[in-house]
Amino acid sequence: MIRGPRLILVRHGETEGESSIRYHGRTDVPLSELGRAQMRLAGRAIEMRRGDRNFVRVFSSPLVRASEGARIVAGDSAPLVTIDEFAEVHFGLFEGLTADEIRERYPNEFALWNADRLAPTYAYPAGESRADFTNRVERGLERVLALWTPRDNDALIVAHRGVIRAIVRKLTRAEPIVELGSIQILRFDGGWHAEAIDLVDHLDDG
Image 1 (cartoon, one colour):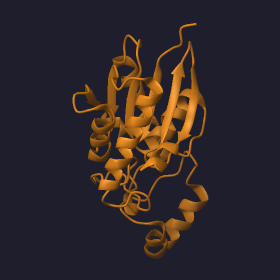
Image 2 (tube, helix red, strand yellow):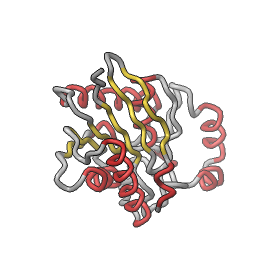
Image 3 (cartoon, one colour):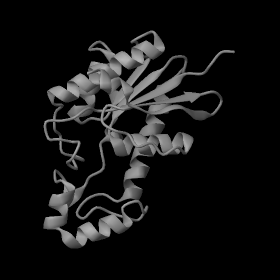
Image 4 (cartoon, rainbow, N blue to C red):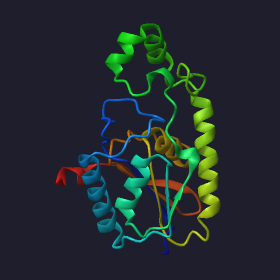
């Protein structure tokens, strides 16, 4: 039985701005050395699964932490296409802050955020609403699926947690956690399904 192509999604690695604890949305921070190492480990894990490092298409967010990550994972010669709609959500007043800093500086907004952050109608103060963000990412996904033709080989997307969650949810209804450097594998066999979610074991090899 011939199996369909896979869409492999990788979250960028740690950044110089500590993306593991800070809410960097549109803030364009580069990968740290740890983040680059995480991307190398992700690339190695994908190559071991596929037996090949080449992708018919490679897509990324326009932000440098994702585009650099894509080049590390897929190689400098990869045919990289940046998708503007795959930029992370705009956190507004929360940009660049930790949860503790948000609570201290904006207590009222912090309380509302914790009560409603998953609601489609929630909007980050002076930032983007969840509905607008989801619609934007889905427009980007439509661009990817239009460019990825014929879908006779695997494609790679390197992007951000919110973007990857929105794509996986749209295609498979799964709800991944999406840690830094994690891998999600979706397969198309007449319909989309999640082949592997939240792969992080490769990060222990570093």
